[in-house]
Length: 78
Image (cartoon, rainbow, N blue to C red):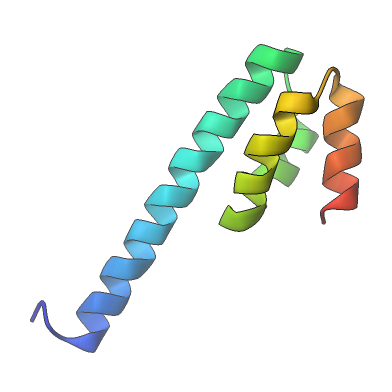
């Protein structure tokens, strides 16, 4: 069963989802520490980002000084 294509596909999707959730949690924690409370509508935009964009945001947030920097980044990276 573990060798089946369907099993491997489900396993891969689960791993991908786990990575995305972990990355999201770290990004939100870092943003909260750097900028303070992140409004729910902005948090929703962040949660909708695919993994590669979350990784980019994780790097970009190091340069943010206020919430408007985050909002500008989200607008520039839909």
